[in-house]
Length: 567
Image 1 (cartoon, one colour):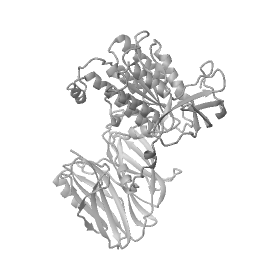
Image 2 (cartoon, rainbow, N blue to C red):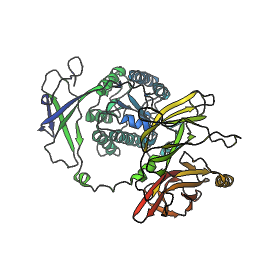
Image 3 (cartoon, rainbow, N blue to C red):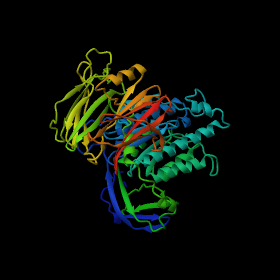
Image 4 (cartoon, helix red, strand yellow):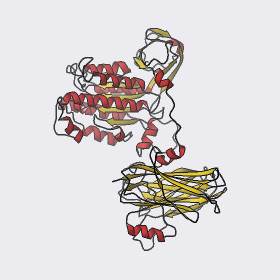
């Protein structure tokens, strides 16, 4: 809602709005004004840098973050300097407008959802914009095996229009699932041609628009062609994306920067209206919305409508509840390309109800050295209370260096009481310089039963027969912190069993990532430890879990550990 000088109108109430749905007047029950400026509400000193995909998704889910996706449709942009040059300048001007908490993701037609990365790194975004080139009408050079396969089709350009529209549908669906609030796509394209309704690609356009409306995603269209060159080709796609999702149409203009400033303004101030439709709720149809304001001089931009869920969608049987142990184990599979220079393993072994042996070890991730080029050489571990008070002396852990004559400690051990605590962690390079420092929450639960209980599984990785024989002779070997292995590896899994005098029946099963049992694994007892020997050569590349259950009469304890096998 903007006034005469295009400034947002901030004092409207529910009574000021008139909403019709399918030409039927609706009673507006609530009107909430949302203002976002890209600044964080409280400066707690924490870095806003996005360190990996999981953190990016978590930040994107926050309602107080302005979220932009820039879709660079290189298939439908001419490689002409007078088009691409001003486009790059406008996009770089847009990036320079971004504020500290703003998030951006870049996508092209062949970008997969798995490779999307939300970022606040302006330098990274600028570099991507600088490298962009249009390819409309060009078949070579071929960028990927997917494009090579396109060349075998009868109509490559029709297929490329389908790829663009399908990618837009996927992007809108992904953004729509992140949160309820507004999300903005800037669709940079001269428009993929779709023809008339009933043509090959028109249903894909319908699907992309529907996905945007279902997910409350606003699509702003930016046609980079200068004034007087724009109205042909893909005009239908650009028109529908903007008009049917409430987006801006930056078309047929030499001032792309002004249009992008309006995009930022739209994401910064808007109203959320709430009403209960008078129609039957679960009809699965598209419903047209018209929004007007009783106050004069106010310009209104809104979505054109939304898709209602069907009765089948609303009454579908709920899926069976997820096994929390399975989902918890799968959540421990950390992508080695994200977040930190090291991956940690934290395990517990119960000695009694009030004292828990807590172990910590680490491995370097594939992220490699830090910005200075130095790899991690040690990790300092200190357990603390929630207020920062130390619970035990700091311990320093060195790397897994089997060639060292006097190897440093590889695993920290602390005796802690159950409850909510934290670990203060510092990663240093070989010269002692700090690579990164953070505090990680640590929740130590009491065992569910005093009759039988299991500690955290410890996974030991060996790459050769000699390493496996050496493992047998070590009195206190160091568990692997990572959970990604090769088919040539052999694992030993030790699971602490208690109390000390328990006689329990144990069952060990290998399952897939859905929890379906693939095999029952043999196990042995070594004092208070259940031991499993598992060569990986017979397993196909995939994700698996080992589920260990110990039972005494009607009481059981269960632990699940997940791992991934690659080639």
